[in-house]
Length: 238
View 1 (cartoon, rainbow, N blue to C red):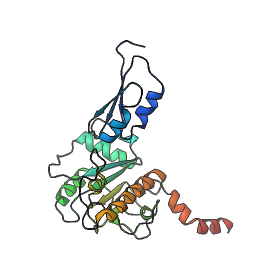
View 2: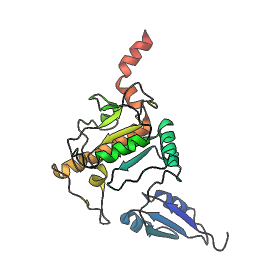
View 3: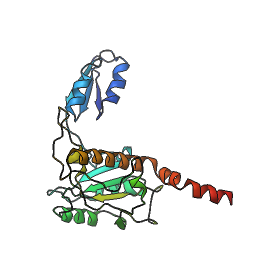
View 4: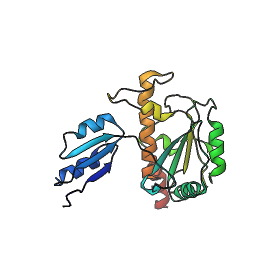
């Protein structure tokens, strides 16, 4: 009811801004900040909503990481050394159920491997192993044998079984496939980057990889339990 009140919403899909718009706030315009032009255009039809296109990310020194079940961390050549505060907060995030997806984005070419090693020295990372063939990440939603992004063929690494696994979910996933580039779209919803070498079929599989990663981090060992349900029931019967 304040004459100068405003509502500011950060949204990737537009759904939160749409919810506030349905409440029909009087004299309180909704500033919906989104990184996607297509989402911004769709929000223009909402009640009292002023969309703004602006990219945003996470600052581990200041932002609350617990809101995010998974954090995507692409490696860059200009990676700065983490502060003690940032390292402590990221370590606490991983210890308490969060998953960090490290992507060297070099197609296993090693360009940013040194950056990943630097980060590994600054964080308390668990021992990692190459993703086993029967790992739940490959069947959390889609059945996957490979995990392509913009590039394909690179290995995926996860936390070794028996370490500090949180509800069956690895606190660290490491790859080199540049998944975000395969997913990226421009304002016209056209791909920003070509995928190598498999064309649009490879891009479709990269979307499935992303869905599996999200389902894996959100559902814990649920899918693994479902796969092994017959054996579990037999054990209970005994």
